[in-house]
Length: 272
Image (cartoon, rainbow, N blue to C red; front, side, top):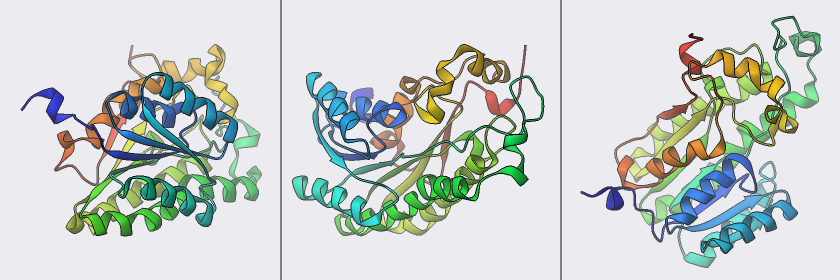
C-alpha cells in the first residue's frame, strides 16, 4: 500500500460548508489539489466566487453554492444541486461556525465583565447555537439519506478543543456549542456505522481566520493563546490539510466517532 493510494481522494465528491474562507477553504484546498470534485457552500456570495475562482485557477474541479446553514431549506437546495451534478456525495465537511465573543478573562488574566455569564446575550446564545450546533443537525438530516442509499460516506465535522475543555479566553457560549458538536459526532457515528457512514471531527485549537472579526491576526490578541500552547503558536488553516486528507481518504477506513486534535499541545497545558 503506497501513500498515494492510501490517501487518494481522486474523483470523490466533496461538499464543504463555510467554505469561502478560513478552515473551510483549507479543506477545499486539500481536496481540490488532490483530485476531488469539490462543492463550496457559503452564505457570502462574493467571498464564495473568489474562493471558487482561486481553486479553479489551480486546476481544481470546483463549484460554489450559496446557502445559509441555519436555514434547512437553503442548505438542502445547495446539497441537492451538488448531488444532482454528480449523482452522489462521498465526503461532507460540516464546517460553518461563528465566534461567541471573548471569555470571562482577558489576555492579561483579569476578569472581563462582558464575558460573565450574567451579562451574556440570549441573542448571541441563540445565533451561535444555531450556526455551530443546530446546523450540524440540519446537515446530517439532509445528507444521511443520500449516504445510506449509496452505501456509505464520510461526515467530517469541525469541532474545537473547546468541545472537551473549559475556557477562559473564549466565550462559554462558543464552548457549549462545540461540546454539543462533540457529542453529536460520537452519537451519530454510533448510529450510522451500520450503514458504512463514518462520522469524525477535526478539533483545532485557536486558528487564524476571519472568525471573531479576525482578532487572532493581531499579535497582541494572539499572544495569550500562543503562551498557553507548548509549541507556542496557534493554527494556520493549512495546518489542517493533513487531518482533512486522512479523514476523507481510505487511510481512515476504520476510524469513526473520533476527533483529531490539532492544537500545538494546548490541551496538554502550558510548558516552557
